Length: 499
Image (cartoon, rainbow, N blue to C red; front, side, top):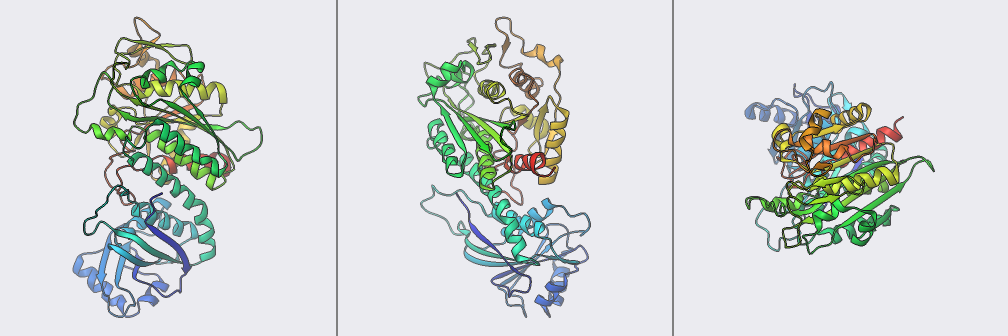
């Protein structure tokens, strides 16, 4: 696990070490403990703010080197904007801004978690700590030589000065496990495809057993016995055998039906016989972002001992174009018994999900299930990289996901489903075809998946624009974002633990 910093909590009155980070509002007003810590340097802040046109806007930062009168190597003033109406996601962002100010090499930092009207709550301080860890993440394990400045914050020791250090420390235990899950998901997405292939992915998922998760790995023979012809058809052109991994966390009431999460795990996608253009094909190592999220989520839930019953399943394949690869025109039989005509072998993720969704719906019988997949370029055209596309057959589940996304900052946007789109995937030779052409491409993909949920309340999240290669943010400078872990952890918490 790649974690660049150590975060601890100390009393608000503790003497600062190293870099000092404080907060002000959009009137440059400081909290009482902050003003006391700065002493005569309060006037220095005002002069520096005037010179730099700093007005305390949300997430803006004023950097003062070697501030006179303060025992700190640097003073960073972060704007909180208008204090009224601040949300947890704002504090997550503030933590990311603070982490961005860490210098290369070893560093110490003290963050005074105080607003003008007094100490931040434990929850707000925990959000800052989470933002610090998320922003400081790096994936550089394969670099044998590093350039100047590439080791920034790699050994940072950060103290959050808070009103109630014991309460904040306790609250950060669970939150820290969720951040661990995000980091696991990022690591998986960032791994090169020659390292992370289906068998290796399954092995890493199996490490969840150490946390009490029950893990079952289905090999090719087991999937053949189950009739998973859609998933196996995708992987038949690869020298790396396919796998399906079923994970179960029983932390809720005994005998209560679980909720379920399904992830697309195409460890590398060439497009198969319908081969992709060479440009940016290396990005297709991230076509398992849905499966990475699901594994990170299960780590978070098990590590924080979530009071929930959860089943997760990931289909792991490589889509390669060798002499045994499936062809456009092939017809495969899915586990559901429905037949699928292959029009384009690059529409492979939905084939993988079809069998795994059916397996979960019939074998697990969950209260609801959510799948995540880097499924279509069409969703990036529609929504860009700010929202994941959400499709659902259940309004209540859709509303819960929308609310959870707003609360944690991993936003979703509901897209339409309807029988009118079904005719686009009707086949002359089979029950359906695996693509409906360019128009409404993300919608027809979701219509396809809906045929394999057997009426279970279900939502499909198309995360092609958010799981990998999305623009850098205050809390993520990694290529793999770990999108979805915090969103689904919040969904589970809202369903089970906040009733």
